[in-house]
Image: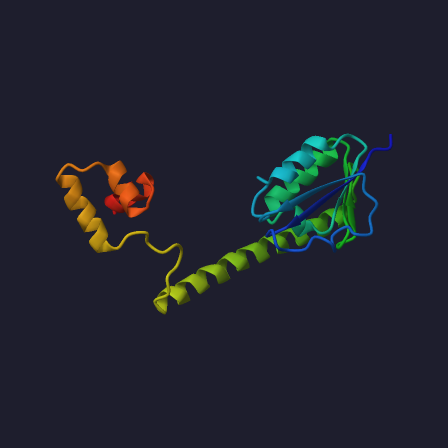
Length: 184
């Protein structure tokens, strides 16, 4: 039974270019995500998995495009091959079907482990960068919407009976932001 040639493409952010992934492969359908591969909770990956049928051939540029976790990667490949879907990782030149050979499985697990390691290193460098920025006194995250003086003023006005909704409007913030500022 000949199925479809289905492509799955993923880049980490909206401004990254997907052109180099699977550009020379003739595909019937393509699913494209612009988000992190840290987990499998990606809209187009879910749509791709729902779309795939027995006899289909899933094309992925490289192992780390499908998943960054070895566990997620193994689960996805096992689930798909059990359904009769063939998966081909073009960069690594690995193909998996129900009858994959042991050498391919070993290579797959090693490459998956490297992808997971790379993800861990990215997080480590991110933590180090944030720590260095804080040490230099740089602002991390969004700047506070209100100064401490404004928060103190709002608290006094609330004690006098003014409404939170009116104060939030006056200071140009949402009520949730007002509640957050008051709880700190």
